[in-house]
Length: 427
Image (tube, rainbow, N blue to C red; front, side, top):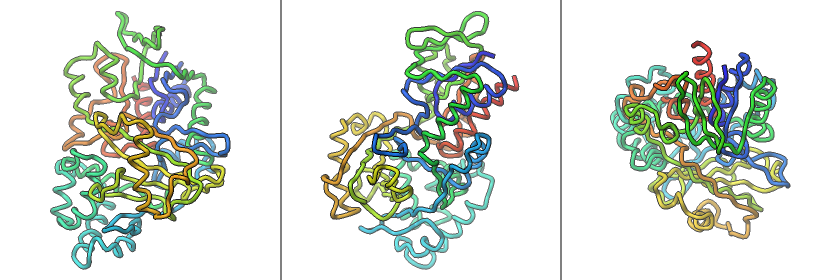
C-alpha cells in the first residue's frame, strides 16, 4: 500500500516503523524542520546533548518505550534515576514522591487525613478496572473517599493548575491512570530524546520510508477510486491510506469532506495548549528536580523543572537548565505574549525558589508553545472517543485524545502509533 502519515511525532514515527517493516511504501509529512513533535529537541553549539522544547521524562513502567528501544537495539542508552518531586505548602516546599514523604507532608496534618490519603492511593495503584471511575469526577470521588480536606490540599490545586476551568469535571479515571502507572524512577535517553527520535526515523528510512520536513498538509480530499489526495505546500500527492496524527480539530479543518456528525464529535474533544519558558543559567537555581505548584499559591506557572538536577549540567556546557511550564487555553492572552512578556511575568517568581536569583544568571532563554498539548478528558469519555478509522475510506486519526484513560506522553503515543498501524495492516 501507498500510505501517508501526517506528523513525525512519536506516534507517526512508530506507525511508520511498523508499516515500512511490513513492506509498505510510507511517506511522512511534517511542517516542522525536525522530527519529533512535542518530544523534539534542540541544541546549541556548547552543548553535548539536545534539550527537549517541552520537558519530558519516561517512567520505569513505560513498557511500550522499553519494547521499542529493545527493537532498535538502544536499550542501554536509556538512563533511569530517581530525582525528587517537591510540593508547595504555606510558603515552603516539601518532598512528595514516596509513601514516607507523604506521611511527613505537613499539608495533610495528622491522623485521619493521612490515613485516608494512604488508603485511597494504595487502592488506585492496585485496582486495574477504571471503567466505573470514569462515571464520576475526580473531585467528587476524592471528596467522598479521601475526604474534602485531602482533596482540597492535594488534588484540587493540581487539577486547577493543569486544567483551569475544566478541573471540576475531570473524570476520576484520568487521575487513576496517573497514580496507577507512574513510578518514582524516571528515565531519559543518552544525548536527549531527539537522539532516540533520530534513531527511530533513521530506521524508518532504512526500511524504505520517506520523511519530508517543512511540508505542511493543507487539505485532504477523496477521488472517485477511493484514493486520497493530499495537498502539501502547493503540490498534490495521491495515497491509498493516510494516518493523521494531528489534533482532531486540525483534521476537521483540513478535511472539507468529513461528515458533519463526525466533525462535531471531533470538535467536542477538548484540549488546551502549553507555554514553556526555558532558561540556561550560570548557576543552579535549586537542589531539586520537579516542583508542583498549586494554582492558589500565586505562581505564574504550574511547574518548575530543573532539568540539570536530573541529568548533569556538564551535558549542557555547565549551564543549568530550568523549565517554567504552564497549560493554557489558546485564547488566553498569555498564550500570544511575546517572549519578553513571558519572561517579565515568570522571572520574578524565581526568587521564591532561590532568594539570590538574579536575571544576570541567565545566559540564554527560549519560549515554546503548542496549541495542542493536553487533551481534556470528560465524564464517560470512552463512549465519546472516535475510533481510529474515520468515516472517510482510507483516512485514520491517531491523536493524543485517543490514548484515554492514559495521559499524553511518548509511551502511549508509541502504543497508539503501533495500534493504528496494526489495524491498517489487518484490513
